[in-house]
Length: 107
Image (tube, rainbow, N blue to C red; front, top):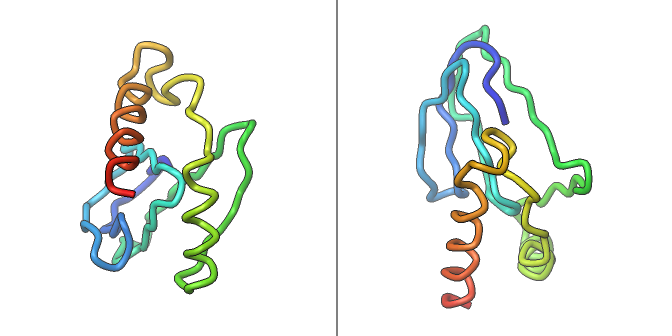
């Protein structure tokens, strides 16, 4: 998700997630299953979203049935081939692997 113009406060990580201010020029990479909610924004706020060419768009609503489905499908999302911002030299792949290891320990 790229912030093309303006600024906003967005909550990442669901209802009890963390609120962060995003500004023009910021890029936010959301792992599959990460809830996000616009809390407030300036009138000029513009965000651009993108998905990997090999990915699919699957919206999960905050409902029990959707949650059960996402618990099964989110872990099957493949690792990206490269960091979408910094390419092969970016930190995304290392962070992705670390998060996967942590996630497996908490299941």
